[in-house]
Amino acid sequence: MDNLLQNAQNQMQKSLTVLRDDLSTIRTGKAAPSLVENLVISAYGGSTKLKVMELATVAASDAQTLQLTPFDPSIAGEIQKGIQDANTGLNPVVDGPLIRIAIPPLSQERREQLIHLMKQKLENGKIMIRQARHEAMNELKKAELSEDEEKRLEKEVQKITDEFITQIDTMGKQKEQELMQI
Image (cartoon, rainbow, N blue to C red; front, side, top):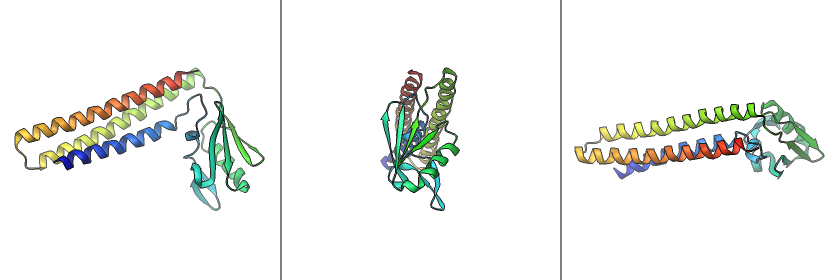
């Protein structure tokens, strides 16, 4: 039955990782490579992610500027168009072999919209965690265990669930602080 607990914990960890990646795409007032590295760019007759080591390297040259260095300077225009088409509110400028993106400061209204979006993503993360708990509880009921053993394992699953929910709440508080910084 330790295998059941391990499976539940692994599934919850995967959900947490997905949520963390999803939250990193919500922009704060600072330049961060995660704002653009998962965007899909049409280049070479197909679509690929901008992510580091596929089309370009992405770095924050300062707190308000992202700098992209395409591996093939001939696709700088496609990268620029892909970023604009992604509706991120970012405006890339091709500067010779580089692409620069100035990160505008967030208005109070936009901060509140992003916090609302973040809370939706956090709730979706909690739903994924609860789903993993539900599946683990169903597996417990299917297993032929003594009543005491079943209760003990249910408490363990709930304890693991509570730990992950706490981690999600902590991530949310940190992201909200980042969003509210001016």
